[in-house]
Image 1 (tube, rainbow, N blue to C red):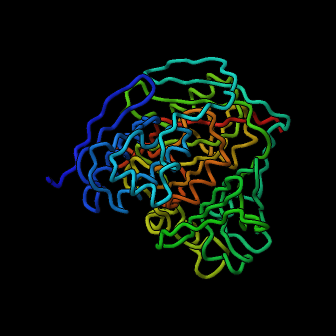
Image 2: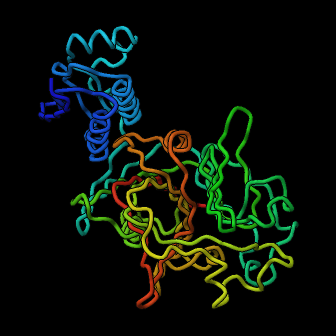
Image 3: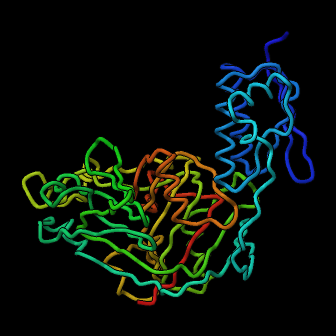
Length: 411
């Protein structure tokens, strides 16, 4: 009997059928794993397995099938074994997995958001939906960002910011006991509802996070930042018409302003990245002997700040949080122009995770965030920038296949 694994794909009306022939053992299970991973990443969310010609399956094979049964449930998809050989059927029966892994069609969708319109712009589809909500979005600015340049922060600048459901934020902070504990580690942070994540200053590049668990409330020691709390009133899903064509971040923000009609808004975005351009602080910002006079002075800035040398973290999953303002100067101490000469000002941080497929519809941001922290690796926290330096500039971040939750800032 030949030791191999052949996979044949057939498209049915409501699902994709994979006819598998051969052995699913420790070696060939990797081939099946890679095949299923490609299907899931490509957005195929209804897959049935025909194992009628599989004459042997080891525990490694069972593990792969169990892995994707779980992943497909998370994205509200359908996955399972439609038919199996007697040998495989007996193995599944003895393992107590026959019923669990039995083919089930895609679960019924929850009621969708009210779709108001879908627009096309330069090869990208934007679908905007209204969300019910009773708590208007409120934005809060804390601290003095200028102190990072003119003397450094002291213990009087440090406050404790607790996060929680419907509460998001960005700025400079650290996870720790108090100012003394954190003074050499303050760096970019991002508050994501029931989680906070930080990129500590230094060369280790080992991001840290705190996730709500029982009575443990995620919190960050904050020097300065922007936080917002309330209900999002719109979602905007975006997808390039051509799968491999990304959307530039400045273009995405410009389109969001146009199609929502909002000059000021807070945003949380879940999206796959085609490359990120950003920075993180690499030196102490607290007042003291170890602090440089101004971390952004040239040429010392090259040592004091970590810059992406080019678009990094391609094909990773990201959560991006921030604010946009195109209406006056009151936000500008905490924001920067979207691009040189732009009337739109913004401030965004991004948490980078290993790739994770997400549902195409009815995505809950808090549930998705918790899943990413529990199941994927947190790789980095970056302050997004638009690096337009001639010849040496890295450009800006690119995204694709994402969803934005948007809240109109009213106070």
